[in-house]
Each structure stands twice: as structure tokens, then as C-alpha cells.
Image 1 (cartoon, rainbow, N blue to C red):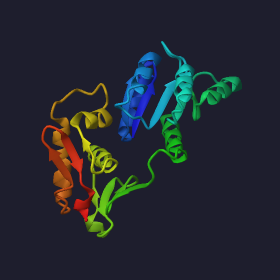
Image 2 (cartoon, rainbow, N blue to C red):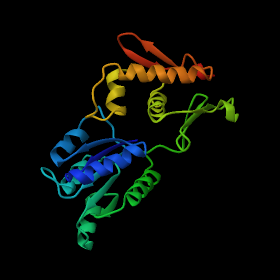
Image 3 (cartoon, rainbow, N blue to C red):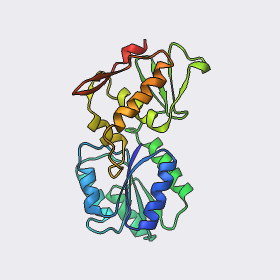
Length: 233
């Protein structure tokens, strides 16, 4: 789950990012609306949720919403603001916000509202993703096979293993590059490590091989990777 956080208060932005990271979200945090629009306009990165502060340097949160909705983007957006008048809430919702949270707020409420957005948004993932015989479960962060559902054969995944396998399962039989994977699964400002994708793929392969799936992820030298769901049958 990748989130774009647009908040210009450094302490609040850092606190939100920390809590979201602890709850397994990948977070890109920016401090002004113009930079946020550059992130949203970048086709290499696809966000599943966005959190906009209302008052921002550059483009305001309201202007970001207008731009998004003018392009018919269905991206779910939660607005954060100190504006608590009814007319302000109406303006934000009419501009295309999906929910509205008034400052100050508790982090537990923020997380609950994000979960509610996920449940209400049909473009976000269901409880399970099934490709071939593989079942990826979002609630338990596990993977298993439709053919062998006994508890001993359910594999628990780390956050990054889960995100990587989900990405492969959403692109079956397609060649995906290391750059595509890095752009989607690592934060934009994360420290660049040249072999981070290859290292994570090795870890995932090793775990899947323990389940007897040693040929699910194919390396195409000079091109990238390809996920072969038929190898799980």
C-alpha cells in the first residue's frame, strides 16, 4: 500500500510517516503542493491513497484535488486541515476529497479513516489476491496454494516480501525491470542501494523454494524478472 503524504508541518509530517511505516505503508512525504503534483503526475509510481493538508506552499490541497479530479483520477484522498467550519468541510468534499480530518487528531483515528477508505474504494485490493493456484492473503500477510491449504504449508511473509510478491502477482507473465519494482515498492527518498531489488528477490525466492516453488520468479538477464504462476501448479 503506497501513500502520498503532503504535509508542510515537519513535526506532524514526520509523526504521520512514522506511524504509517509502522503499519506497513510505503510513504512518500513531501512538504509542498507543487512537488506533490510532480509525484502524482509521474506515471512510474502508482499511489493507492493520498493525504493532503489543506494549506500548503505552492499548490494548496484544494488545488491538488481539483487537478486530480479534472483528470478523472479515482485516487482516494483524505484531507487534513485546521479549518473546522462546515462550509470548509463542504468545499473540501465538493472538490473531491473522500474524507476530512480536522487537526489536532489522534493517530488511531487517522489509521481507522485510511482503513475505511480502503474498504470503500473498489480500486483498492480485496482481502485476497489469487493468481494461478496461489492465494495471497492481505489480512494475515501469508501465501498458500489452493491445492494445499493445510496450516503447515502457509508461508508467512515479511512486509517487503509481501509487497514484492503482490507486485509480481499483479503482473503475471510480464517482464518487469528492477527500476519498475524499486519505483513502486521503495520510497522515493529512500537511500539508493544498487542491488536492493535483486537482494529482496533472492530472499523471496528462498522462502518460496521452501514451499516447493523454485521456478516462480525467472531472471531475464539484462531485462528484469518474470513471474510464472503456472510454476505453482
